Image 1 (cartoon, rainbow, N blue to C red):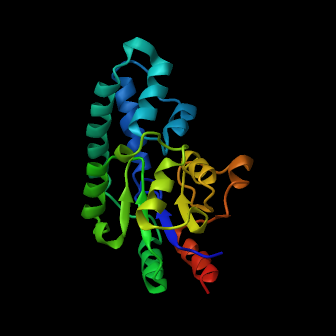
Image 2: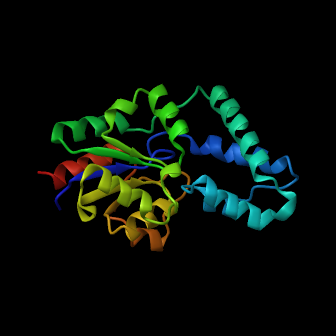
Length: 220
């Protein structure tokens, strides 16, 4: 396999934000007297704000004010992160980035998160300058599992989609990579892969350092 580009998801893949996000949505829903069930939360992982608004509004109806819930979520996420030591990188991220630098393989972030939030997180962790390009949720019309975000990442860097490897943790992202005809490596975070997801990924790794080993072998 020729590797022209590695495309990184961000939340849950590079940065350990999903537990904070879950508590944020829980608080936002509780404000309106609703509970966040596990099935609903799983459906939100990896999706952008527009998709989340549609899913939550369809489930809870006119009594649910998405914008208010989203504001409460953001506030609760900040509280959660402060209580748990702030943002943290997922295991193996820096070794993986160093490996790709040594192999001279370009790296791009393709996330459902909006640009301002993405920049803030990556800058805070000293990661922003480690990447060659960025595509964010507010740059696409259709979020994951639509392939637009990954195809835009390939276009941005001049890579051939079939020669891009996507790194993802969520079913929505894995389906987006599959729809883009890009090989995908999954590093599970909050969701374990089912048989359908297993059939759509090139490999499943315990952490990003394992990913580095796979890419190094593919590039040798």
